[in-house]
Length: 89
Figure 1: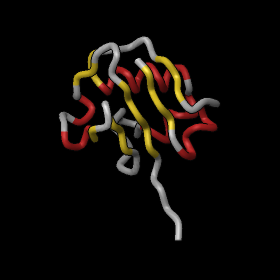
Figure 2: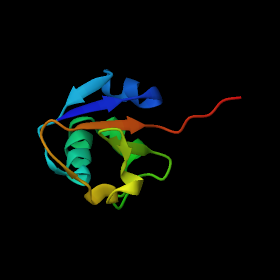
Figure 3: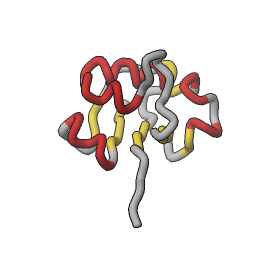
């Protein structure tokens, strides 16, 4: 599965996108991703393994907040996108 990384999260993985050998749920994909890129874990997941409230995750362009959250089912060929908080003025 392709995972696109945006903004301030990119330097933590050193790429704009990565391939993850996980499917099932968004939670499982994020667990696999953060196991490979440990610096990403504290920015994306809290101590209980839940998504940080400031992180937006999209599956095929749709926010998981409007789907089944971390329990959203994903399949091979889907695309996951991670967006950190954005600010500016």
